[in-house]
Length: 390
Figure 1 (cartoon, rainbow, N blue to C red):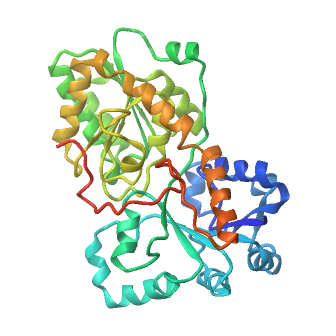
Figure 2 (tube, rainbow, N blue to C red):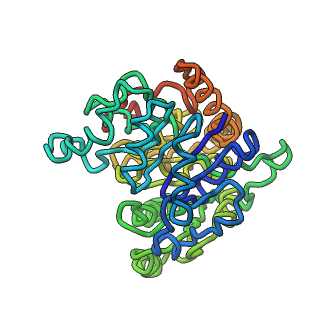
């Protein structure tokens, strides 16, 4: 099987999957990068030397060769390319094609009524509803967006982002969390409004009022970081906080491994939220907003993590206070979170399911996974109606 993945550029969230595909297929797997990475992403530390990755080819360096590979590959996985002509040519060929997408209407499904928008969605998606094309939904709410416009009927499947997997022996897992009499909370991300770093300060004030022993680790930078740091100082909370600034992904994981709770406060504008994978892989008890794309796929509320509804700070606070008050009763969720990533939501498992799925497409069959993980049928989950804690 020749398998080609086409997207705008490769980044550290895609490399684990691509590495797994390359291990299985060797030179029969190619990642085609259609454009150089934007300067903003480079400044955030996302830059990679793509020429060191044996499976990467750049469209802007060899357009003829890349287009030929896309046309001739047995199966193509199409991400966002910035080149509608590339997708259109492959989709028109009738050869097996899989698309991957986050939400269409992240800011609100009311946008689906726009005539101009629907015309664009028809050209890009709806016209292929009966073709040999399937959609991987990178986020639990993507399927409802595509259902709304009538695209990919009965051909939408669970997908996401797959971060580097860390595994631990029983002894390592038991020993890695800090044991200094405090519960350690980690928050990692850009300090921008959609990620609500200010929620962490409000929570810390409440924990202090309750007399709890805790430490908050905040990793990342951004426009709101100076204000959050100043508010921590003016509130007399400096002894409870550690700020790391911009932090390399490997170092983020090192900090997560030592913490007990991972707090993910992004709102509905967060398509997936790869740090949820990382926090769960690190054995943290996850507390996440139900509106983010990863939450309904990865978290079973009360079993391997906790979700709170509709960006409601008060509900998030309530869940965290419950963890502090009854930690011994809830700490096992961290172990269950780790097992969810180790056993199912990881690049090796996703790559294996993707190749089985692709093999079926080559035979004219659609064969979804049966385990509720990657490549299983995507349920239609409408925004605001996910069955989170009430």
